[in-house]
Length: 305
Image (cartoon, rainbow, N blue to C red; front, side, top):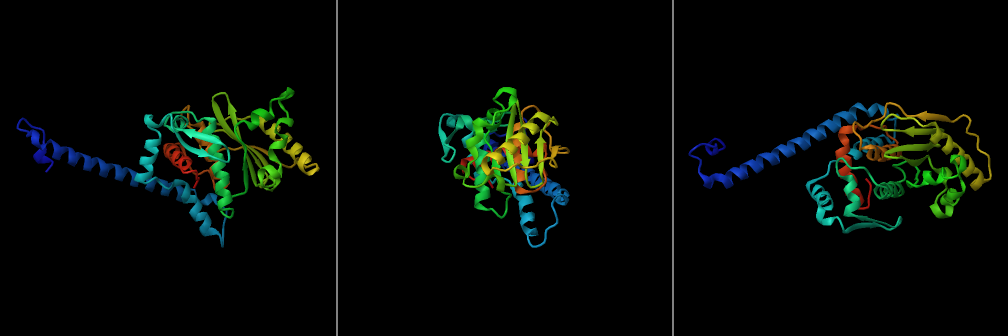
């Protein structure tokens, strides 16, 4: 039939609708094929990274699920929902309100999740809240974690000499959090450096202070500040002196790195996401466009998966 519609000097204009219909069908099939190839690529990469998981026995099926969950593709309805949210028509609309953090998410705020854009504080803070809520829903599947807001570290280094515990002293009372900070396996701290996002982790589970930079950078000062904070926090809340002399200061190597100048925020969020799942950082730059769309969907539905 396509041959019968070939563009020639005798082409019948009445055949144009049929040609467009066939072309649309071909494009849809091509799109479905691309989605399938994308899923196959994900599966192959996940199989390659399966060795990153610790050996499991009774709970092994749980880990199997968790290494595939971060890569479940959006269906057509979800993709349409994301597209509508990012349209210019919704820029001034409040699309969703996260009541616990009292953050209104407008279409304008969500624009930062478009390809090539830098993430803003509102999106980062809401997403980190959703990660904590995910853990509360399914505590057996995820590590017990705490996620500080983006302005925590700025407050912590606001004093003379680059350190001031007082402004953040009351942020982590058990009454305010609903849990004890020291019961957490990992404490995540977003770090913003001018135009670049990094992640620091107080890793109580493995007794480490970790620094993750998607551009491979290192900052000893960040880790020293967090070590000092942790000592002061334990002393203030428990009245005890904690010995961290044996803890490691680690600049995480061989981690997924960005290949452009604008995806640092997404890498930072996914570091936190994957670490809170207790699986390896089994993703790369190719996955970031998908993660951007997925994050829009999760924020719109106020549910991280």
